[in-house]
Length: 375
Image 1: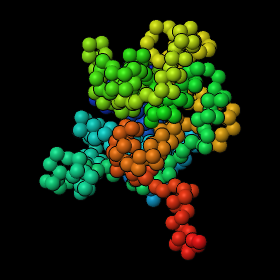
Image 2: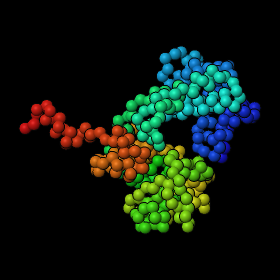
Image 3: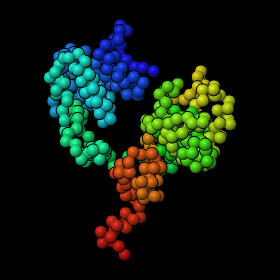
Image 4: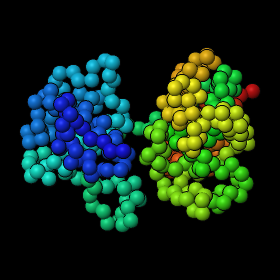
């Protein structure tokens, strides 16, 4: 699947198309296309072109979509029901705009002033040096003048309400939904990875042929062409060796996960599956038996949360946070939580989840001792 940008009359936008073709076959192309089309619409309203646009104009656009920039932005752009971009979307927009205009300035030989303004450098940080092969000789790093300043990492990610798993399992209507709640509760699976699973990715037995894990497990493999458009966020290499899927992101499967899988497979899946080979299917409507989308799974969790009268909105990400927090509470080792949750680094796990439980007996005891209230 390929993405480009069209004008209302159906003609292809040449600038956008030449830029997006450089990302053919990747998820970046889709992400940049959705980000770039909003900017091009804003640019038309402002009467700007690639030849005339200045860095100040790009800062105005970033302010109009949600960045904190100390300047007037002009007319409102993202008006209700549209919402300002969040931190991640602003980072994507900044990266997209820099890449787009550098590509246009270089390929068309125009607007040297903007090209020079975008090609700024910064001093490398210690993290940059640690990541680089010869970090000790680094003297500069490319910077993006459009990127908003990164805030501190949130220390308390949103967890599930107390007793959420039991409450959700009491109100779900199908074996498929029960399996989804169980699998999200017992792993740190992302919803895109879960809804993108194929039956061949599941090795729910001891000593599977892949040799990657002794116990029951599953492989989350990034596939760009899934019919439900679900895709794993992380893209490690994977392969099929002697008919068995290997590598990818590996998640251990609990006995409850295996049990819920067989209950689903022997009832609903056996009755409705249409031979596409994906794990999660739709169980009602005209598209019954076809692959179930990530949005469908999110909607199911949201409705189940309301039926169970749980506080707040139940999201797949909350399960991932809860699982990692629980693993860290038991193991007290960020490295264990990193491996169990397939996180990028143990340092990140410790920064986000390694805070004390403010209601634990240990915390209360330490506080009472400082207050001099111990008996």
